[in-house]
Length: 408
Image (tube, rainbow, N blue to C red):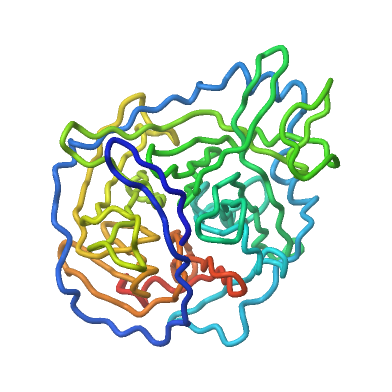
């Protein structure tokens, strides 16, 4: 998992090596060495601003016009394909890969995963604007080396519905700039390590700060053409976005706060828990400095739960965490929680850890290069865990039965 190096409040938030990996076989469940311990949740708070870019977003919508999700998917221009030949993981239910260009791209890396089941639940087969979708976040670097600098981030919307072709579409994530009279936008050079879709809002993790917020009702139309490096307003009403036909502008920011003396949270991955109506996050840390982990924080990671405002898909202006845990596991790229149960993916250990307060911890074999996790509720079939691999040439996006991994 590549990460961009940054220092914030004395803490080093960085990434190092891409974890390549073999495929996991049958899960070997067993007692983990230690269990999570409870922390004081009141130490962790969020402040939310959903109106940060209102004037600029309104001007961009007026200037460029928007396309609803069903129009974007009607214009989907990439073919998804089957899982890598020989891919095997216990409890495998289904999955896909991106086209060959995206599967092997050493500049761009898939990270976060969420679905329309997160957005709307199980009603109407989990359709959002008429489509059942898998959404993946990506970041792009300026080179194929691990030292490459983050340049931009994007999402892909993937149709997961037999009614429609097996297609997906890329949408660039942008931050509004300029003025209301001459609005523009710029790239968002973040790792996008986790993503959660709730209602119309998309929450994207920003490693050292919290989350950026986007509204899927505001997908903007842009002009294709120009050069690959052109971004934003060019002249008059011409807007380029690295040849992307669609961009999604940021609408707000959810900022994390910790008290003096508490290490700032490293927002490595996030996931939605629809049952408790909250977002959970976890950190990528290492037990010690080593050649395969030279730049990450060397301390125990945490997992924290932040509840949404009652009856809303937004956070209140100020939110206090409802649960906080210190974890005994390291190199965590993914987290999920549902009905009091927790799952943590460690790409560095090729393990999936399961924990509940009553049953305690268990450990299962998992894939290499694994990233975020999303819980898929199903009213008629087995519930699933969706996840994905970032390794070029083997970017499987797959779903497993959650019961196979301790869920019961």
